[in-house]
Length: 497
Image (cartoon, rainbow, N blue to C red; front, top):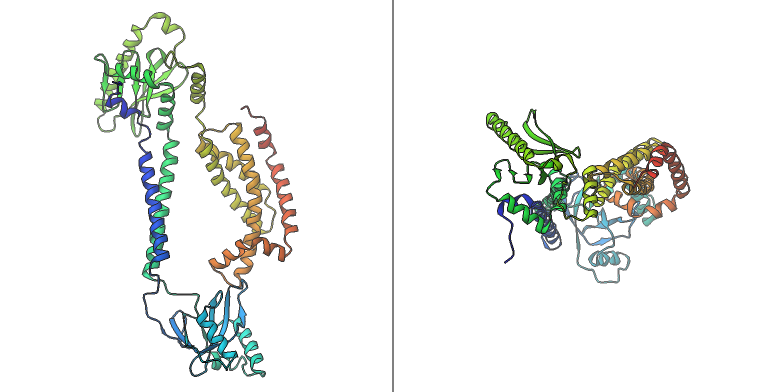
């Protein structure tokens, strides 16, 4: 039967316990997103209020309905050519202005066709549902011009426009929010928060000191070596301090105060305690000039923790005195005797320099450099070529890589250079897109306008003949960025691997 580790050792080596909460949060996020999509596709999102009969003088933002018997061709559309304006006639042949999104449904096409071909049998009236909106100046002009052209004389003027069409039109692109719509938005918000919480928990745990110390130790102590240590841990001669998860075996100090840590007695250079506002720490310094936390406490029971410190110090000193003279004066091994040389080199390097995680390093560089993109756009909107922001972008990318990746080596620095180069192009594109959006927002400030600009960005740039200016600004931006970041770029290229 295969030998099993003790429960005590399992608790200290179980360093991936946080994975289950992360998985749970991601499953929760997916569930919320799925429920939200299901409600959006299958649920009832109709307004909860009944529409009133549309009147052109009653005011804005009233959910209304209009039963139309005929309607004209469109007389105007927005700059995106997605929302179209028509004249619709009720049973008394009074004209109304209605706005409709996209292509007309069949029921509207029938009453439109009937207006221009009276030989057809009268179709069933079509009902428009929407929200009353004030008629804007440009729509008034288009309406007057089109209506007068349709009748062949100047029937409608600025003075009598209200008599013909009133002050408000029916905007069928707007509907009052339903309870279902609010619920869907809330569900999507919960899903986003769950996904964000899962991501932050994962990043925090992977970059925590406890996890890094434990992972480094477990790289060295694997399989049979860990089982042999476990046998020592559970030996009769082991001094155990369960509350602090500190154990003094025959050959090793096993601590779990700030991560799973194993320290040979011969490696101990000195043992000492420190005090701070949060309590006391019992520490050891090893001969490789590393500092290890053995226990933390003393906030509530200062005397008890001080007694523990005294006991542990004495026992470690006693253990060191028992060691042969040649071990104390000669070389010592922080890791088991039969660990492969390559593994020892890797572990030593990880102790000298925090282990790097390229995946999270790239994520950190991307998110940090986005701040530089924002600065680039901000400076660009003032009217300057934001070359200095390229240097800031590079510094932020390097800092972000180091923060989330754990350390910054030459590979990571070169990745940050590549990310910065790409981000500069993206920042310049975003600068032009923001400028274009600001221009279009003068006509209609909405999310739909924003989507229209970004989805048709290439075509709009070509139509406005802006690509030449874009590439000139991009070349100048790269030049200024290289000039301002020359020292940092040279340092990166000269870094040792």
